[in-house]
Length: 317
Image (cartoon, rainbow, N blue to C red; front, top):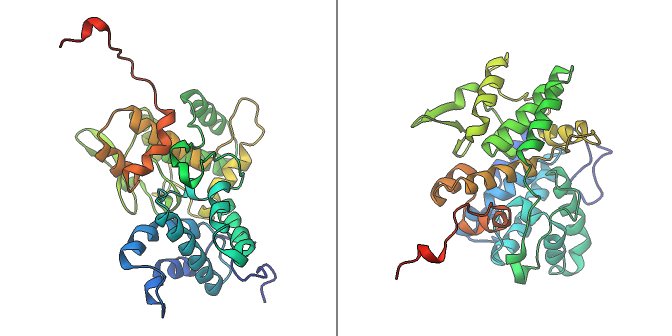
């Protein structure tokens, strides 16, 4: 018997990332096949993507534990969906939302709380308190991890370029360029290759498993240069890919003049940059993969103030 399996049978602590068979279990799971379905087909269509994204980050222990994880994550996301929370992992897997949910499940609260905290840690959201989110009744107060500044991104990339360890150098550079420059998160990294880079109307884009994401102009040259130097077609090393965010965070921790790399903060940097560029909301949603306009609310506090100002002389009535 696997000694790393938890007593709840939900999620182990094995450091090995979910194996391919774990992916199969996650992708094949459907609560609609239960004797008593916990949701409608429409609800599962809404919550399914974020449930799969969350659970795919967990270490694989067994098919049974993965199915248990899918069941628990589904119940959690259904509750959040019915409370009208945006279905974004960065918002849902925060201390306040987890506590609000566990308060609603009675005697199972400790079991759910333990599972959801492990789920948050696996998704690189283990430091509770970094996600400052309002109560469910006052979602307008939500904020995320602040985006990186361009100077911070430059310092991370410079630090990575100075590393003699080629594997670490490529992993940090790949994560930063794809997450901050293209909005990658979770499954977006799987199988992405040089062939996925392409142009639309002279703008550089990159295909993911579910969308075509615009590459931010300030990252184009660096990403193309990075891709040209890769000896393999894949833009990121597929070995232990699920550990990539945690590895990069560990390698950049406590470095003087270098902010720690956090995958969700890189992703936030991308979304805020899209909004600051004043693209159409349709283009922002398509490139970011955010499913609803409500999902953009949390990024609004980080937007730059418009440079144009109105003066009294500018009004004509």
